[in-house]
Amino acid sequence: MPNYSLNINGKKHSVNVDSDTPLLWVLRDELNLVGTKFGCGIAQCGACTVHIDGEAVRSCQMQVAVLENATIVTIEGLSSEGTHPVQEAWKEIDVPQCGYCQAGQIMTASAFLSENKNPTEQEIREAMHGNICRCASYNRIEKAVKVAAEKMTKN
Image 1 (spheres, rainbow, N blue to C red):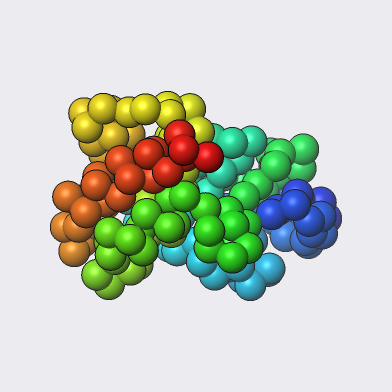
Image 2 (cartoon, rainbow, N blue to C red):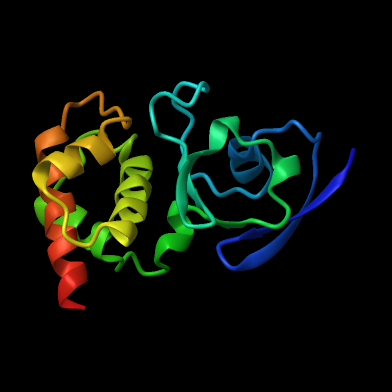
C-alpha cells in the first residue's frame, strides 16, 4: 500500500492506504478524527464536508491520492476551543437537534463566510442548499449563518 503525507488541521499525518481511499475514511478510520460524518457516500448530503485549501468539499468523494499537497481542515481543526464565529453562532442560536449533520453544516457555512462577509438571506440559502438536515433545522441554520457573519464583521 502506498504511503501518503497529508496536512490536516495544521499537522502532518502519514497514512498507508490504497490510493482510491476516500478522505472521509482516512479521517475517521486511520486518524480517529470522527467529527466528520458519513451520510450518503455520494456527495449529496454534506455531512462529510471539510475544507480543502479553504474550499468546502465532500470528503466521501475525495481520493487520498490527490491530496498530498493540500491543506485540509476538519471540524476538529476549525477552532481548538470551539470559538470560531460560526461555532459560537451555532451555540447562541441553539441550532442542533440530533446534531449529526452539524459538522458539515458548520464547515460549509465557515467556508462560505470566508468568501462572502455580508451575505443576503438568499445567498445564505443558496450556499447552504446542498447540506441536508433530517431534523429540518434550516431556519435556525440560516439564522446562525447570519449571526456568524455579523460576528465576523465585528472582529
